[in-house]
Length: 151
Image (cartoon, rainbow, N blue to C red; front, top):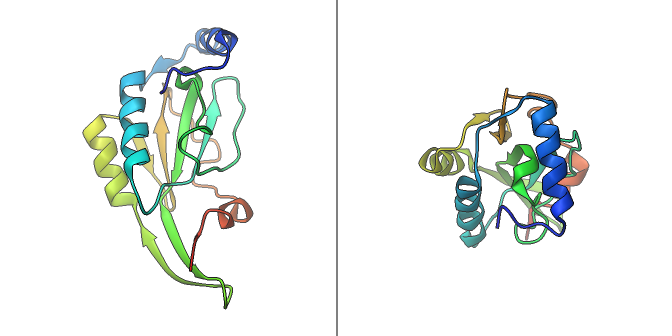
């Protein structure tokens, strides 16, 4: 869950950076756990994500919601969710349709009470305040190609 960590050092480092930057919590483990559990239950699609840690590290895009999440979440400054699902015909190597999941994600985030901002293709969930808009709504198309639904 959100507080999982291979090392206690990760939590200690995160707390040190939080204090140094005078960050204020916008999320907590309970809210992160609700998000994680809900998305893990989705059968047909899971949003690609990336995160920025309070240390400054920005992850690559990923879509594996069991082991690749940015644990422990105490160090997550923000979490981006890419909400466009692109259906691709691999025989023709072309997109045949897109599905915008922003409404269902927004409803979930509102229900949980997480603070977020919606962009053109991305929702950013704030782990800490003040809000950081660095690289907001940017996507690395090469990386996202890996996550597209295929026929």
